[in-house]
Length: 113
Length: 114
Image (tube, rainbow over all chains, first blue to last red; front, side, top):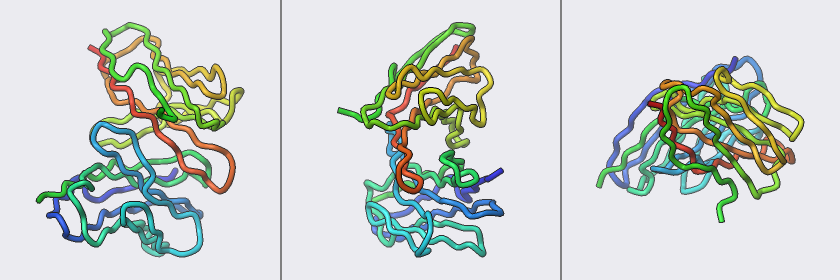
């Protein structure tokens, strides 16, 4: 079965600093990878997804992620964060290429002034 | 208006009670999902339905049942609620066109079982 590991449960950063949220997955077959964001008291929204092609994927709100097959990683990055980026971020992988998603446990990003 | 709605948004119930959480969508999607979210555990799939006649168990279906009354409606039931079912529940939808279309999430239902 697929699994997703988000290596940091909490990441505090200062405004305008760069940030990287780490995600590793387990799979022996091709995968689809996703990052979702959950703002306080809201449902999840898709930030970006990797299906195939270029390994650098750009998403909404200035976020990007890089698929690294050899390291089975899909880390999320933003060069300069804003207070409004404070949220919980979830990495997810499709299970066997199906429509079912397996989520990581989440990383809470807190951006401080 | 929201594309995916969930009712109720908050519910407190007692152990042993039957409770139903409802999800409606106006996106015209054929696929619907129920997840639960627990602090530190992320989201886990309870049930999913790829069309009205297709219901499938997810990772943690024990203690839950579902009903797909129409393409737009997917209900989750707890036949006899227990305290460890206290969680935040999300409904999601996706369509079957294209390559792995994204899932759209509702706002969530916070359920407390005392």
